[in-house]
Length: 246
Length: 229
Image (tube, rainbow over all chains, first blue to last red; front, side, top):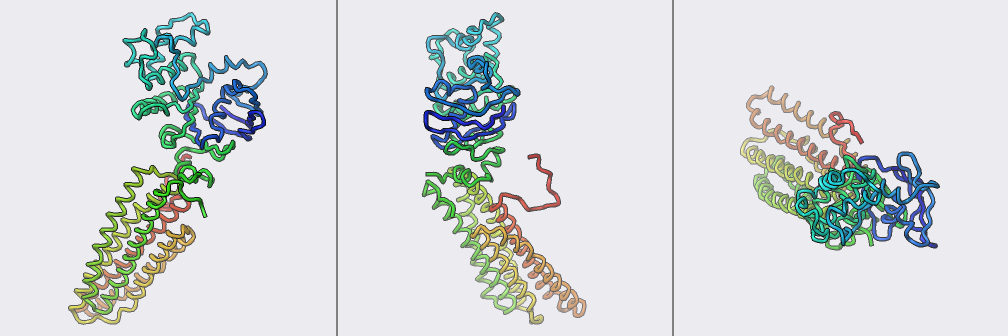
């Protein structure tokens, strides 16, 4: 995935300024920065979720497999199947069972194959299968927060995306559930390209191959995660990772 | 000057660690000077003092180690803080070892004071002054985060080695001339060797200062594995 000269305005506010970055396939990119730096906006632009915000305007391009996601004729709904998203708070469909949550996307697409097999496969990939295999027909809300979040990951995987966007996926979870999500990310990056936004710098350091630091709508620096956390190039990055901001 | 940490307690903890290292460095500097003086001036009391003072250096080593462990566990340092703390963890071992070398020289001083004087030991004093100045410079480079100064320290080691070799050769000649001097000359030779080792530890320190400041590892350039990044 490649982002070129991305600019975003919400009304008069210029919230992302000229961001260009490569996201290597089958790796994890962590996006860090203080609140309001534009990192969530950046993430949302990668599958055009920001279009749901009134007054949002975008310039520049996001390329996946060479094609611009902002090109005329690209259906944002189709696009979001290729670029899936997991949110801060687990948001399973509350009235649906565990099984139906995973199957929902496929049913919407009019899928006619073996749903059982795909649902099981996605739950295995999301490291949830062993915990829910005997309660597939139970309500999704009967699961713990961490299980619900992994269910949302399974739901996102069901439509076979290429890229998985994660917006603070573990910030509402306890440390054990967080560790499971982080462990899962290590496994998922063998099949998917992952971009994660996190406030937790140690989490960024643990899960990512590359890290991007945003500040006031700008991409200040991006590089191998080890470099960003041991010897960043930019003073602003250094100040942020060492805790010298505001 | 760079910004300070938002968390002031963290700032203070890092400052305390830096100060502890400097106190330790100062004590080692004083120890090496006193140990060589105890040899040249045949002063056993001074030698005993060097030995006693080393306990303080050892205690500081344990304290610095503990402070580094605490910072790593509780603060999860990154960037230049991480480089500073890992540097502290490494140079504290060098400093402690340097304190031991001063003690080793003081032990020789006690032996030598009990035997007849060998001959004026000007070069040994010069070598001691040299390695002490090198350590002082390395510690300054550490405090001032001055990598260029640390590089000067690294270059200075050639002079240390040359002077050591001169002393070595002179003592060798002396032992060949007069076999009764062998025991005493060996003690002086050991002292010189300890000073030379002291200088080597200073180089380790300077190398770590360069890492701390620039983030580049300048150690062992010939055995470097090419980076894949």
